[in-house]
Amino acid sequence: MHKTTSARLDQPRSHSMAMRWLLTGGLAVTASTLGLGSARAEQAQAHGSTHGPVAATTKPAHAPAGSGAPTTASVSDTPDAQTLAAAMQVQALVLQAQARQKDTAHASPKPAHNPAHGSGPASATAHTAALAHSPDLHSSAPKPSSRAYIRAKASALAGRTEPARAATAAGHAGGEAHWTYDGETGPQNWSQLKPEYETCATGQRQSPIHIEEGATLPGPAEPLLFNYQASNGSVVNNGHTIQVDVEGDNTLAVRGSVYKLVQFHFHHPAEEKVNYKGFSMVVHLVHKNAAGQLAVLAVLMDPGASSPLVEKVWTHMPLDVADRVKLPVGLINLVELLPQDQRYYQFIGSLTTPPCTEGVLWMVLKQPMTLSRSQLRLFSQLFPNNARPAQAVNNRIVREAM
Ligand SMILES: [Zn+2]
Image 1: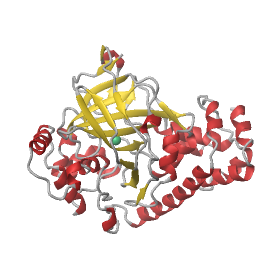
Image 2 (image 1 turned 45 degrees about the horizontal axis):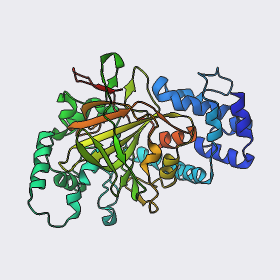
Image 3 (image 1 turned 90 degrees about the horizontal axis):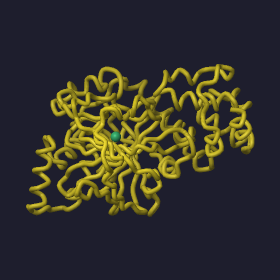
Image 4 (image 1 turned 180 degrees about the vertical axis):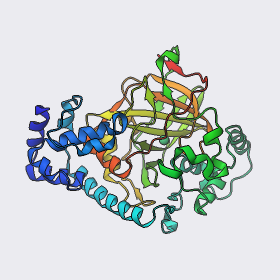
């Protein structure tokens, strides 16, 4: 704790204070003069969603300390100029969001139509956006082929009621029901918002799940064969999360199939729980194979050292819902996100957002990665809770790849 304090005071004083003020909306100015309260507040916030109410962030500086945070976190926490810039962006975003919420308490977010951003409707969910990025969308006149047939059949098998093309069209037409993570349009009521969302309630293989090692099927690990490389992409705030649509040939081979990375996005707190432990964040890497089947890799994250990948994404954080920011060429390399230990849990589940489509191959990496408290705070200010609660396992086999 004291180590944390001194590390923070080592930073340029004006920079440090400005950063803290931005991150806390000016609420922790007093605490920042000591470099003490806000560190605790950040710690409380980082754990708030998984271990207690967010109100913990308002504890005064002299409140009893919580569980000890890794002292190394503070060193890597050092905000650099990019984080500062991102913090300013987020501060503006939060103010905009607050104003918007006041104006349209229950209205669906309806951003101005922008033809230039055709593939990123604000109302599209993180996962349906993935579906929308089917390669065939980019060919103007897809010919009937065996591949298309297989894809359609796979879609049908996966319980998808409409092809990706139709889903996209619906998104553009504003056909998606407004859904949220709390209140009347929250997870408990997703199935009632639209007939297509029925699976959210009736599905028997829903995600996320709480993984209990005592109930897994331990076995030798089939290695996950990653072929990730420096790639182009763009970041979008789709109203439910921050998502990066990735271009290029990034693949994950597993179970005899090659899945191509389509997009990745973030949830805070993590949707997955392992042995009753929650995590501060999870990154979902959404892949799709030639047959249209989805495979999602979950990388859990806890507070600690700063994440280089997160830093890159936050630096280019979109300024508003549906705003899309193109990333510098070759900026994104998902290798940076992978832990050393690549053992994982594997099971069949669903999209964790409406329409909760099933038939998704899930792999949850056991070893969590880290992100700094500043990085976590930037996201949690925009999305205080964008995690669907754990769903019933229903005698599903969860393979524990040892
Ligand atoms: Zn997700």
